[in-house]
Structure formats: C-alpha cells, structure tokens
Length: 242
Image (cartoon, rainbow, N blue to C red; front, side):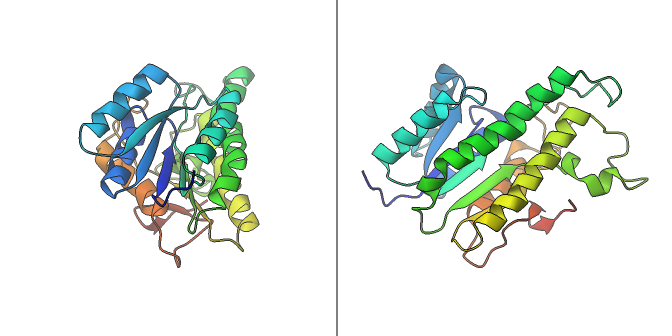
C-alpha cells in the first residue's frame, strides 16, 4: 500500500530522547513509527502520543534481534510502501566507570553490537524503502564522546571522559555516517550524525539539558531541506569535529 504521508521511524523510542523525537516529528504532521524492544512499553508510549492527537504506531525493533528488522521491513513495505526518515536512536552505554586498561572485551563487543553493527544491519535492510522516498533522511544518534579530535586534544572537555566501549562505538558510528553518505551522494538521501547534548536521561543522570532540547538536533537533521548537508556531525546546526 502506498502512502502520501511522511513516514518516520525512530528506534529506541519508548522513553527519553527517542520518545521526544517521536513527539516533535508527530507535531510536524509525520506518521511516526515508534521503535521499541519491549512491545508493551512501546505500545504504552505510542498511546501517550496518540492521546496528544499525534499519528504514532509502535513497532518492535530489538537491536540484537535481526529477525525484527526483516519483519519491520515487511510491515512498512506493506502498510506504507516507503520510508522517509530513519533515526537510529537506540544505544547503550555499559562502561562508564571503566578505562581502556580494564574494560572487558565482551563489554566492548556487546556495546558495538547495539551501537554499531545493528545500526548498519537495520539501515541496509531498510534502504530500499528509503530509496522510494522523494527526500530520504537518515540520522545516526551519535555523541560528542565519539570525537577523536576532542579526545586527542589536551585540555578539552572530554579529557576525563574515557569509557572506551561507548566512545569507540560512537566514533565507528560516525565513520558509518561518512561512508554511507558517500555511497548515497547521487541520491536524494541525506545521512548525518547528531549529538543531542548532555541530556538528563536514565543513561545520563548528570545531564543538564531537557529531552526537548536533546531531541532538536535529530529532528532538524531529519527534516533538512534539499540543499542541506550530508555526511556531517552536528549539534543544533553547528558542525562538530570528528
């Protein structure tokens, strides 16, 4: 079934920044697919937004469950016929209290599985649907902690924030952004990385920004005009160092 609506998918969206991204896109008139690993939590979150008058449906997406990716493709293809926006928001951080000389290898692997490998897998599966959009947009929710430039700069604000697994997974995600943007340079699809800022969430209890502020960058990149950038790393319109 073909749909003329703008179809937006946000992963990891039953709470926090992802939930607010869904709300902001819904307020722009998009049909929003709220991705959640837990079906019940996802349905509850989607209902909250529907109660606000927004067009939101929950879909099950488990970062470590690739079978949910193919089922999601089939669902979107059958019900909508295309996908306009993919925001890869789902992510984990496991090693905040550890350093590179002590973080277990398995923890690094687990972090990369969710923050990097699953993003590539889901994006590649959904790309045929994004190619059917007149203005496809892919936003990879990254972090300033993935900036190798800032980590290597003495005295930078990242000097004391060195969880290897999380930081390296976001640096790798940024590399995927650059390479995918290059691969799609002759298409209308734009691919960018977003840094939400230090947002107060379950994963970041020390954050100082609201989820409303944290969602803005991803929403901006998801709704770029045809002459907007691609292959970049941004926070609220400002380019960040790789």
